[in-house]
Structures are given as C-alpha cells and as structure tokens.
Image 1 (cartoon, rainbow, N blue to C red):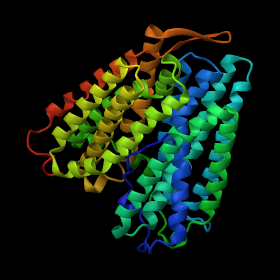
Image 2 (image 1 turned 90 degrees about the vertical axis):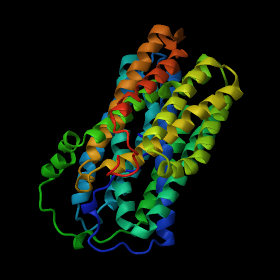
Image 3 (image 1 turned 30 degrees about the vertical axis):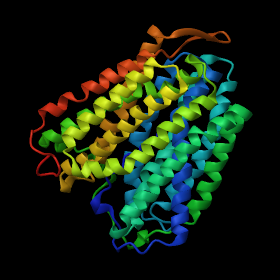
Amino acid sequence: MDYQENEILPENKSPAKPAKAITLKTWLAMGALAIVGQLAWAVENSWFNKFVTDMITPDPRPIAWMVAASAIVATLTTIFMGTWSDRSRSRWGRRKPFILIGYGLWGVMTAVFPLTALMKNISTAIVMVVLVDCIMTFFGSTANDAAFNAWTADITPSNKRGRVEGVLNFCLFVAQLISYTAAGMLIESKGYFVFFYALGGLVTVIGVIAASQIDEPSAETLPKPETTYWQDIRDLLDWRVLVENRKLFLLLLIITIAGIGFQVSFPYLIIYVTDTLEMPISSYMVIGGAMLVGSAVLAIPLGFLAEKINRKWLTLVSLLLSALGYFLFSTSTNLILLALYGLLWLGMNTAFAIVSMAWLKDLLPVESRGRFLGVRMIFAVMLPMIFGPMIGQALIRQFGTPTMLGAEAGFLPAPIIFVIGAIITVFAIIPLFFFDKRKTTDQTKA
C-alpha cells in the first residue's frame, strides 16, 4: 500500500552519533528507491484492481477482499518488521538487509502477480490473487514502509530534513505520474503480462542496485536494546495515548471516516472510467494526470495555508469541497469535466491530508510520538481500506450494470459509489464540532 503521509518515527530510535552530510551517491540511491517503491505502490492501488476485473472476474468483491487483506498485512508488517529493524545490530547494517532483500523479492512477487489469471478455476484464481498481493505487500512494506523510511530518518541531519522530505515527495509525484500515464500506455500496447514483468524487473534490479549502494551509521556502535521485542511491540500499540488525549482521538476519527469515504470509490476508479463510461485508457490517463498534476501544484500553497489558517476550519472546508468533487464526478460523462471535477476531489483530499497530518503532529504528546506509529496506521490506513471497498462493492452489486467476462457474471461500478463517498466524507466533519472553538495552531491551542 501507498501511504503518502509522513511516518511519525520514534525519537529514541535515531543513531547514537549525529548523521553525516548526505553524499551524492546517497541522494541518488534514495531517489531511485523512492521512485521504484512508490511506483510499485501506485500500480498496486490502481492497475491491480483493473487487472482482476479484466482478466479474472468482473465481480467487485475480490477487489474489496484484496484491498482489505493488503491493508491489514501492510499495517502489521510495518509494526513487526519496523520494530525488528529498529533492534537489528547486524554487521551488514541496521536497515540495509531489509531494504535490499525486501526490494528484490517485492519485484519478484509483482512479476508473479499476473500468473494468477492462468488458473482455470475462478475461485482458486481469486484466492491466489489475494494471497500473492498480500505476499507482495509484505515485502514492499518491509522494504519501504518499515526500513527505507526509517533509514532516511537515520541518515538525515536535522538541518536537511526539509530537503529530504521535498525529494521524497517529488519522487512520489514522479512515480504516480508514471503510473497514470506510461503504465496505461504499456498495458494498452503490450498487455498486462508484459507490463507486470517489466515493472517487477524494474523494482528488483533498481531496488537491489540502489540498496547495495546505501550507507548507514554502524549498527554495532548502537546500544543494545534494553527491552524485549514484544515489549517494544506492546509500546507501539499504546492505546493510553488515545484515552488520555480526547482531541487526538477525535482527529483520528475524522481521518478514518474521510478515508472510508475515499476508499468507497477509489479502488474502482479506473474500472468506472474505462468500463462503465466506456472511455479508452488514454482518457483515464488525461483524467488521472489532471488530478495528479493539479494536486501537486496545490500541495505547496496548501502546506503554507496549513501553517497560517485555523486548522479546524481548513479541515472543514477541504472536506466539504472534496465531497463536492466526489458528487460532481458522478454527474458527468464529459472528459474535460471529469478531469476538472476529479481535480477538485483529489486536490481537496490532498489539502485535507496535509492539514490533518500537521494537526496530528501538533496533538501527539512528545513522549509518545514513536509509540503511536502503530495506532496511527490502524486508523489512517487499515480501517479505511477494509470498510471503504466493502461498502463500494456492496453498492456496485446492488446498483451496478450487470456484465459478463466469459462465463463469469459481475457488475460495472455505478455513479452512486461517488455519491455515497461524498456523503460519508461530509459525516467526517461531525467530530470537528466537538473540538474547542479556540484557534488550533499548536499543541497548546489544538
């Protein structure tokens, strides 16, 4: 899974010695790992779902099962493998073995994914699709979410963190742009099998080469952990932080509800545009490209606004405008209007993501930031990706257009998935009214 929010890394997990200046070799390795990793996530979040519909079954339920299972695996992997890498003291490095092996096997499993369509029994094919996606997610989350993100924090001096975050966000934009454009063109011209083989090979080759070039502080100089592995896991899932911080729980509730609204329709977006609206993949590339480029352009000014404007009201406005974008997207079949409405939808969703993450960091007690990582992922990633697609598939089965793929019956997504997504997003504003009315700009005023 692709988690665009910045991870809240443990403050007490940094290297014993201050990080040195970042070399050109490290910058290049970091950029390469970030791009291929985010590209793999972007493809999983979009083209995997389209592949299932086109090659296995038009039934929307397997997509919901695949997304939910993958979200659970990603969350648990980040918690358990991230803790393992924190405690690692091997002579090969602290994070490097996880990154190198993880990226290598991540690419292999990506290349294996289309082979699930060769299963003659549809039920077996569906089980294998979910299983292979979960295995791929395990290696991806180990390499990228757990180890790579922690490595970037380990090697970055405090005065370079803004620069590193800028590079990583630029790599995210490049990866998503490739997914929206080049990926679609390759699938349209060469087919799914060539596409997934090429992507898997790219992730493995570039990932292994780049990972072999990274440097990191010597793990042997770090003090040995004073607690056991399972004590660290228990601390990561410290629910007392929520019990003791009402505002933090309310904000996480907002993030969860808004995330569910987003996930009602997003896993089915490509299928809706190309199958329900019967537009070519090139049209989807126009819509997706407009949404992505527009959101990227808005990201910087929105980041400044998040620091200048009352966060409660900026959250309210971004959620309402995002819901409006959802609704308008459901009303049109015109390419230009779909691109504009999609930009409003995703642009305002980006605004919400920026302001909610800034607000979340304000509300986190300083002594609990690291332990809170696992709890945050449950609310921000796992729950939305379980319940959102399940609601979406139920709506598609009830209101979608019946279709056939060989002997397999299914349904094409209906516009109502965007309408219900909009309604759920509006419900996300309700917890806002339980916050204090005073200005929410820092932890003391949140």
